[in-house]
Image 1: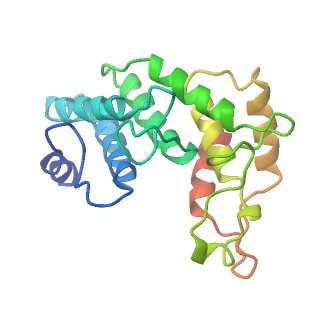
Image 2 (image 1 turned 45 degrees about the vertical axis):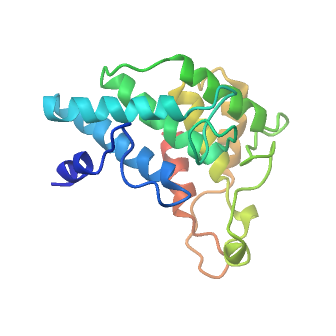
Amino acid sequence: NGLKYLKNIQDGEGCFGPRTSPHYMYNHACAALAMAEAYGLTGSRLFKDPAQRGVNFVHQAQNPYPAWRYGIRDGDNDTSVTGWMTMVLKSGHMAELDVDKGAFKGAIAWVDRMTEPEFGRVGYQNRGGQSSRTTDMMDRFPADQTESLTAVALTTRVFAGQDPRKEEMIIKGADLLVKKLPKWDTEAGTIDMYYWYYGTLAMF
């Protein structure tokens, strides 16, 4: 039923869901990832076309230099949206959909630009910067309590084809994640589901 729902809210360009939210690209990425996974696991022809069109929209939205953010080739990039789009492309590739492998090069180029070389920390839109927070959440969830974007970047690097046994920035980033393992502390503001999701995926 969920997959039928996603098929019904996909528009003519392949975007899943309405474009009313300024962050609709996140919605599309999660839905496109689900559809690509569904097709890859079932091989059902019912899911192949919407999965392929979801991948196509990811390609359509990618900036030429070099990644993704909140719009279609709007010239702006960030590490968070880029991570989600890379996951869609990776799942699409594994499901044997048509995926332009050149898109992975753009993702790597962005992550390289955002990676601080000495320790391997990755920023949102600034090299080695802290994770992004809305202003009203900054005090409750301090950005220095997380390595979420480093985790996103590690996942992006691995899914884009870099070898975690050889790539120095993957090794350095993993060392940072090991120093900030999940800790449930409501007072310290360490609870970060986004970080724990990507951190688990990256370390796996």
